[in-house]
Amino acid sequence: MLENSNSIINMPYAVLGSKTGFTYEAGRCISMKVKNKNNKEVIAIIMGANLPGAQWKDGMSLLDAAFAE
Image (cartoon, rainbow, N blue to C red; front, top):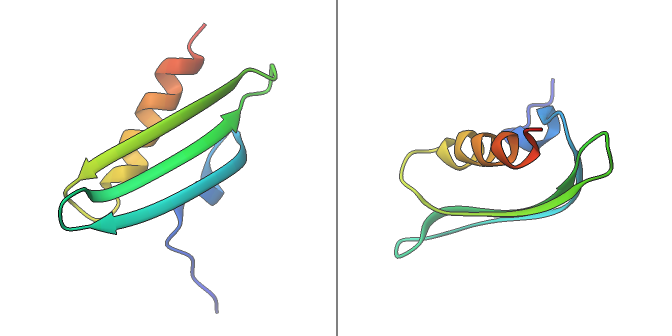
């Protein structure tokens, strides 16, 4: 059985590109460009997540707010 810890695969938006990263100075980070079902595109950058997986939760909150109509 294969497992994937990348939560981007469960995202309700079309991911056009993304990059994750980690440094002690910046914490857990992710940058991504996504598109919703109405073809609106957004770039989101999350930096400084302290806990494992927090960058995904923060990213989804940011994207949901950006796509709110």
